[in-house]
Length: 132
Ligand SMILES: [Cu+2]
Image: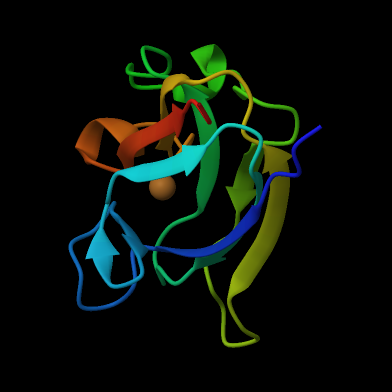
């Protein structure tokens, strides 16, 4: 069996200075994420939005496009969901980490499951490529 790699990402939800309801990843807004099948992915999610709760779910490409994605979005991979991070307080920011293995090659997407956020733009594509 070929050993697959691992990848680490930090995703920041709506940091000050960027539009509301966006994800910031490596300085980019809602970038497309591309990984090889079998990659073990660790994502730290930080909610930097002083006014709202956020979350992160990697789900099927067509799921969760409605107002309430938490009703329809299912994690595409075991462990690929962090449903809720409260908004930052003077005590600090809310953060969490998810880990999952990118499975079947295909096109997925990541989104915020809080009602209305994905519709406002808190989403991006997540592509798993074949290793051959
Ligand atoms: Cu959100």
